[in-house]
Length: 262
Picture: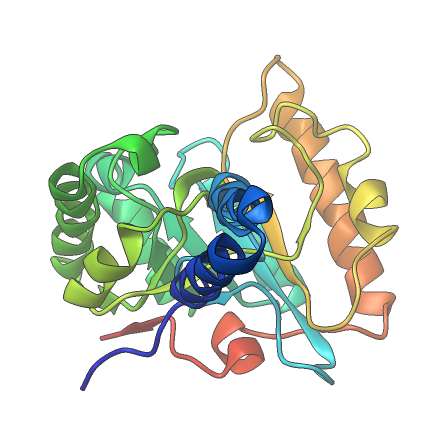
């Protein structure tokens, strides 16, 4: 069964159709639709909530009452055990989008995440910030390598979160080959990968709302007191979420799609 057209394909068809019509009747305006399409192609990769090149889950459906916690860039010996301990104390379930290379180095942390009842998604093999500029072959190789490594733990991720939330036109066919779908986020603290953890809880609570997929990081902050500051910020955040009307729910419940299968 042929996959439905992406937004990019639809916009391309409309833009080229309009360009042809304008070429016939108003030639000097014929390039405008084409420039519009090119602008969309340039801007879309940097908008994590816009599924221009492929379908994206970035938020729960309209009317969702819960929010979901997701942690990127782990596992990390310095922070994963801490995060798991805090999640357990608040009885929250989260999804960890892990880096394959780190999972290979810390297999016990992957097993601990699973044993605690959390879910795991694919976040690429090396978190290459320029991954979406690589060839389709290299893009597929990176994602597939992470899939295979995570599969050795007895589960298969069904969701992929691209590094930095950036997508491209090649990603769709690569993910289809690996039976993966894309999930991004709708709320984040712009913490720079836990480089700006001071005030993290306050920044999030100012803007989080029902249906949000919250992006957090499973990375050790810089400085001797960085992990302690992160711990305190997560306690503030989790306490505020517990008191908030937005219930913390597993990601699969929020988006209506399984994160992985065992």
